View 1 (cartoon, rainbow, N blue to C red):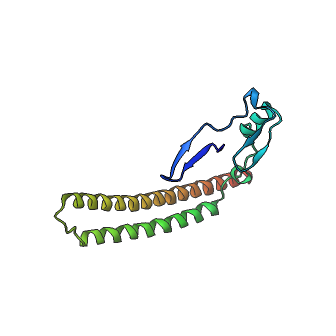
View 2 (tube, rainbow, N blue to C red):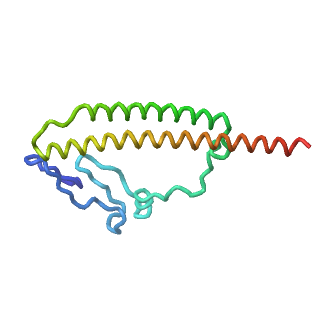
View 3 (cartoon, one colour):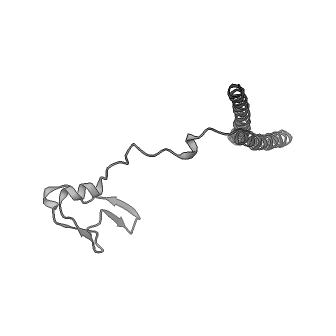
Length: 162
């Protein structure tokens, strides 16, 4: 078998061998076999290297048009409203989960089970509190950005008037 990956069917173990490399001088103008046919003819080692190791993308990419333009006041306030709504829903979920955990104590005498259930409860409460905090902070930040943009627009309008 000429595959670079051999499967032992009795134990379902995979045995890795070194894959065929095309940058060796004796591999020029050779056909790479996979056991089920051929991949194709490789004209020379330089072409094979350019196929196997392509050049990275150029660092000079055109910037997005949306990232260049400043954020409008309406977009800031709309984002703040959406984020605040999600934060309120996450806060309600956090309170509900907290009340449920407080109302249902852990009924077990096994110390390991108690520790695992405490860890799971802590993890669930922490994730809900984190989501609440992140969305609330985003809402406050977007609200502050909207107010800043609004003040900048008024200041620019006053400077243009005279």
